Length: 245
Image (cartoon, rainbow, N blue to C red; front, top):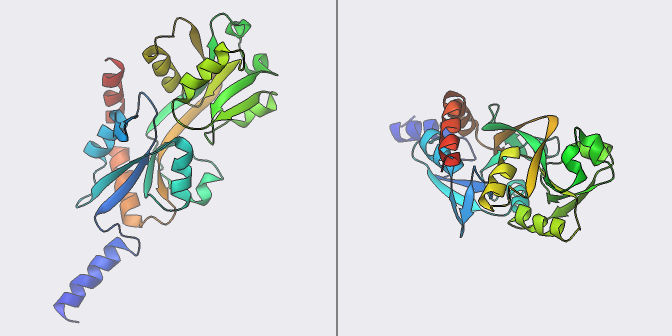
């Protein structure tokens, strides 16, 4: 075999049929304090961590910032290659492949007004019959439905802020948030943490992962997974820096 063809064969074998051609499209959504999307420009510790610790040689990262529901659509229709901070589920695993190592582990929570009787809640049973706002297409534990809790989905951006307005208009009893860290940070930034409290739902440890499109080439998957496993602790340091601001 001529030398040129030998080199070409090695390159094709290494990258496989779904090579990116030097560009990796990474989908992100607004998830403070992990990621902030300002005018389509994503920032925050999640972005810094990917850029500094999950590098892929000779590959340009193209950030695609969208509302959360669009993240799932983009992944399902192969418009992007990777998405950050997603929770695995049986439905999502039909069109995504998740990292074995999580980016971050948190708990689910419910934002409630401090003047509400729900401030005395000890478990989900205390929320039975209540209506909670939630981001459309985001992760919803089945336990909420089992306890007779009604979910009112809302699409678009600034979901927590808009749902707080619904609480003020007596249209909601609270806001379900898959990640307690997001709720705590948002209340602080909106300067309403004196009016609202985050109730952490018991026994809801939640892992947020890097998600890949289903047909990602094995070399890229293994490269990101190895870097994530090696540097996972560094993310907590970056997040703590953000929280201290």
